[in-house]
Each structure stands twice: as structure tokens, then as C-alpha cells.
Amino acid sequence: MFRSKFLDALRRASLAGELPLDPADTHAARQTRLRELTRHDWVVYAKTPLAGPEVVLDYLSRYTHRVAVSNERIVGIDTTGVLLRVRTDAHGGKRTTVIDGQTFIARFLQHVLPPGFKRIRHYGLLSPALKAEKLAAARAALAMPAANEQACEEAAAFLKRVAGIDSSCCPPCHLGHWRTIEVLRATTHSRHGDAAHCTGPP
Image (cartoon, rainbow, N blue to C red; front, side):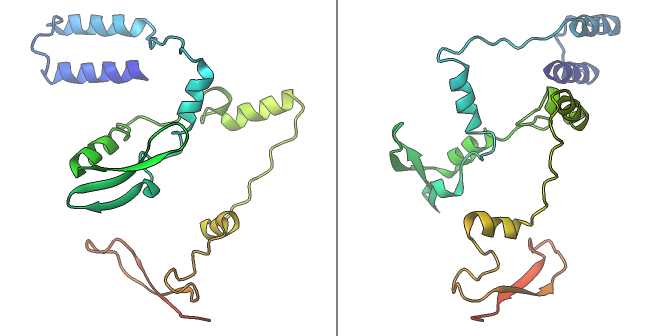
């Protein structure tokens, strides 16, 4: 993946004339260079972690399905900056700190992947292209039963079953329920297409 992206960027830069000091100053020389770079496998350098691979896996597993900064860590936002809750030690201690808005946004954007990159990429049996076929072959080889089809569940039902939260309940009064009264046509000034109001206590 990295080789193809690098070579594509190199090819585009050469065609656009963005490499004035390029030693390959002819079309034939550039083609020869691309063939030589494609001929070899590109291996990312990696060395054995000091604490072992288990520690690395434990560290990475905490970030695969999380955002850079969760809402619960943001205590407040005002003109002075962002009041953020951070860890003080490895035992769960917490403290708050103020970060100016520009620094907060810059740190947050460091966790945004560039276009074309994926946070999790599956290989082997879980490769998206042949996952169904390979998993079926593996189950057949191991004499394992076929996987059960997962039941589709709406987000509201899942939230109520797992967290005990009724998303249709009115947050301020906790008595009434939300009811859609009109569907509005989306405009440049509105981000929500539904208009709803609380029906009040049942």
C-alpha cells in the first residue's frame, strides 16, 4: 500500500514538473527508476518492542474503536479555551487542564487519518474480498457449524436494551415522548430534517 501511494505521488510530481532537481531528467530515466522501485518488496522497518508484543496490542486495542477525545472528557468550552479532563497517573487519577482552541483542534486533527488510509485493515481469513468464502472453508475444514445470522436491531432498541435509555423519552421532563409532527425539507441553514416536540406526560 505504501509503495503504491509513494510511487503514484512520485509519478504525479514528475509529470507536473514539481521536481526541478530530479536526477532522472528524462522520460526514459524516470521509467527505469519506477521499474526498479517496483521490482523490490518494500518492508516497513520494525523492531521487537521492549515490553513484548502483548503490551503493544493492549495499547493499540484501546484506540481502534475510540475517537481522539470523547465528550465526557470535555468539561467546558469558553473564550479562554477548552477545559479538558486528563489522566494524572496510571491508577485512574484525574485532573482538569485548559488548552487553547487552536492547540486543541491541532491535537485532535493529528488523529484524523489521511484520505485513502483505514484505521483497521483485515487480512487473511477476515479479508473483505474473500471473507465469506474463506471463513466457510475454514469452518468446513474444522467441522464447525455455520455461523448464525445476526438479527437486525434498530439503534433505539439496542440503546434501550444495553444502556436502559429510552431515546424517545423527553430528556427535560422524563415523562413525555417525542413525536414527529412534520418532516422539513433540508436547507443550507438546517442540519436536521425532522421537527419533533414533546407530547407531555402520558
